[in-house]
Length: 430
Image (cartoon, rainbow, N blue to C red; front, side, top):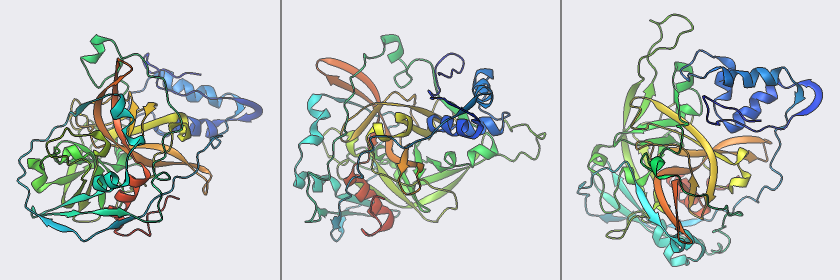
């Protein structure tokens, strides 16, 4: 079954088992596994999504069927990745940043076969160099922290390659490449209305004052893209007084009951206390690599909104619907929070290749998937990467056009987790 919205397919394939039961609740769950939009549509049709009858007919059709939809664990779940222990050394003081770089919201890189496979053949010394990190403080001072891998960790065990390789599809036609990050019909959705902007998972998306997006990963920490605060050589000018913006939906007191306010959300800004960027991104005069395009911002004060947990990125086969999701503040829709989802097209050790529609400003969005939790026996949303930008990938003499997200490997997960918790004991993958 395919669900369509004004033409392009945005929906879900479901298997229906006739058992003489209605599938109201299960149908809602099945739709949510493919899109975050299932629950809002069922509960309240008068939202800012602007969906038309074909979408409503999906729910009406399933409600009318004598069926049961099963939401099962994937048949071939890979084992949980081993999370290594990183030994952190005493921070070394560095000179103050000049804040001379200009923020670049539209990051584009090129990659060939050797770059695509480079994560498969890497030595321990190089890894520890990449995982060292800079800390930028609010007063402009900096430190460098070097790390080592715990002696008990075998490098072979902590760099698992994705279990599948997908065949690269032909690149889009030239007239579609002109809008580089939109692939065919635009499949993005504006998130409007008090209930939805403050509802999980949309409430975890925040604005970054340099023009990017971030995702809440603790009560005081925000993940974003490194290129939003650093160009690979120096911190951007806006990083000197970096702030994080929380959406505050406009009051609906002046609107009639059942109507959604047309006003844009307000933003409450909070200063950042310190910023951490991996040395894998800070490459000096070398070309930047998307592999380490992530940074963690620590807020001056804790917030009270729900945040999304982190996870080592599984193979796309182990994601519900093999899909990823993210919400961001795309520059062509000012003042709007924009949500999208799409299947994973390909994956390397460090990157997730996909055709989720996105525009500048969405950089730094938390890319999440529904990961099966064996303890809870259900799918759980977890951040598995950060949306970086656009990449031309040249494989076997052919160019392929992708939007790209940084993939959280066990080592990156261990590094980010240490930044958040400040210790190794809280950084196991459960």
